[in-house]
Length: 497
View 1 (tube, one colour):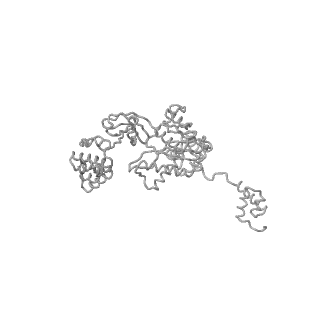
View 2: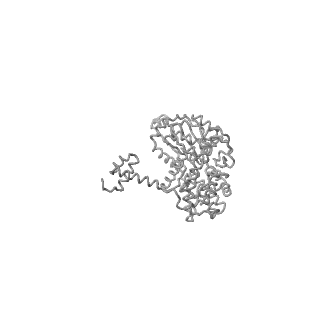
View 3: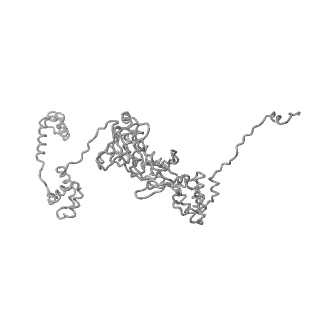
């Protein structure tokens, strides 16, 4: 209305509608006249044309930009602004002030945007259900312990990117074929089918990387044939080509770390407990995409009736020390097998020992650190022989390995200090023999360890009374009551004869 002052709110409303409508419509929506609208547009045009195009202060980079910085940027595109800044602060203090750091960083960013080389582009992919499965190993940084012993391990992570369904298996050794094959086959079994293609990076367990061809190793080729999928890999050294698994690596490990913090403990009693912990986390993630997974599961190829080989075979002879050596690790076996030739099937997490075709023993696998050796010794395998010559215990190379836990190590330290040498060895061997006989290894160790803290060493006979229960061998007798007539037959002529 004439004489009415236009408010700032009306101007704002007009400017907002002017972007999409004509001057007449925008003026009507703002409740102003067309003349006022023309005046507002004219003022905006003047403000735009009056915007300054000149510098109000001297360029702080004028002395060094063209002569020093630009040549550095042209020579090496990987140079970081902080590196150039440090160089200028060290060698060109007469021309450059450290207070101009932000100006330098903005100028470098602008120069590279206008003159720099092309950058890598991430091309988002469209994945069909049942078409692709991606697998890769990833290292776990969380300080997980098993019975308070550090656990060095990694995860084999398998994922179907179309639905987001995933599987993770704890791996205790390196990126071996046994670990890769076992984890991949378990992933197929858990998923309920096999995708048309399985993609990995350039695993030495799967590819012969000395050539540029996709030359599969013999064992991986057998696995591919057995399950009927196409094998593919990304280019060597280009991790982001497996982006559908690399990014989920971080999400999975972060979720494991958060769950460990909420649990308030990184320690697990057994490996199996930790494996179940990881499996529960992955199952929790899979439940969130169960609808997509059901669609993808219908598109997967059927599983074969039997699994393919996921182990390596080795023939070993048991030495006179009742041990075998494999992959720089010495394992003890029952002494009855000394001089026997065994077939050993080596998995990522265990060893299976066969005598002929009979499975006779299963051992937990130990992985030696690079460039070193390791031992896995059980007193249960040799204690029956050791109890016949207990004095051999003291200087045995396997002495410390024969002690099953910290309680027994503390007991040996105590008896070694307080008893004569022969008596100390005799006591320790008898105690280990009792642990095997009673089946109460942990309870017996805790009992004796608690006693020695009170400076009282219990006698072996006292331990036997408390832990060794000997069931009385009472013969089972069946008494048959004969009839009176049978006794009559024993008297010649009968009762009246």
